[in-house]
Image (cartoon, rainbow, N blue to C red):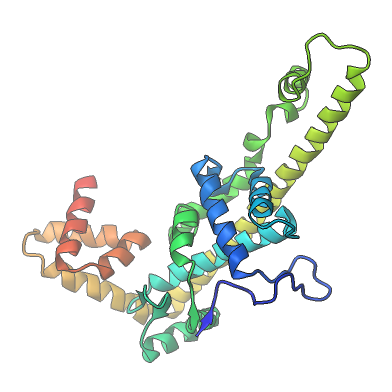
Length: 310
């Protein structure tokens, strides 16, 4: 059984000709996981990712925990987070399919040979998910759980598009072009420069301000690239899901049959309530996946919650 989290075992190994690819050790991955959770706790998580500048914090955390490491925010950490998030999205999609389960002891995806054959036949990208251990899956759920990889592709696609179109919301005030007062205020407060400037302090203030602007503009550039990559991934996943739904009606039909059979056994519900519950479950990927994994009492509890919120 292979681990699907690490890219290899040799620290610092880089594929020849590709400086963005780097093999991570298990220790480095553990530190990055902890650092991601820490920046989330400190409020650096946005609706569909992270706020501009988070890579700088992650890089600093990596260097503090592992002195002498050659890991950088770009390209190493940015690439790693991007790959993890993409893999998490694939796992969520896979685990939402009928007759697919999660083995928390082995950290693997479980399904019969027949189910795997049917899934891989419709989308061969799932083949690599079968024999790997996903030891960081629980951590990914905590880190990326509110991001686009929740199964609600139509909604999250729009959110990702908004990330690209509204990135100026994350740009610091001093970069609202034309606002010279904001620039001056930033220099005075951030660099702790006295309001009474001497001739010798002005060049220093100007130099410091320019350096800060360049650094923060680079961070905004990183956020733009990450948002565009995120949008491209969501587009691919969304289109793949649409194709699979058209190409594999039997798999979808099986999932619906399981839900309907369970609802029919809920004598506490009227026929109208059973119909409404079925619609609510079929329209929400997360609720449908949860429903299929609950016991009978849990299923009834979830349905009642959905009906109350309707």
